[in-house]
Image (cartoon, rainbow, N blue to C red; front, side, top):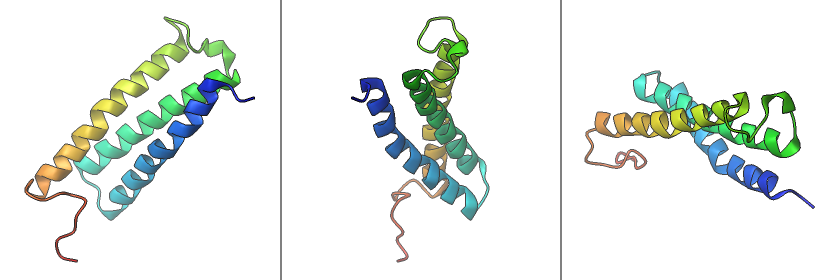
Amino acid sequence: MMDAMLLKSIVACGPIGLLLIGSIVFFSRGINVSSVLQIAGAASLMVVVIAHVCEALHVLSWMRWGEERSVGHYLDLTGAILGFTLFPLGYLLQAVGKGGSQSPLIDSQA
């Protein structure tokens, strides 16, 4: 039977992977500050998911995943802080850059 942490990590990989792919597509359309922030934030969140997969599978156990004041803990914490700061900031800059009155997901010229 699959460990609960591994299952949660695999499930989280889907939405975070979509964020990362979307950020890469946005980045490929034009390099600007908002696209760089979004891709850095999405990549940081993917580091968190990978850290949890490694913890569940006991990979790189020398990092002491899940223990306080360990390399694994600080890698996970730093990834989460950067991800939940940079991605929304990049998205906000993208929305403000387009005028802020319309949703950045809707193309009004279609």
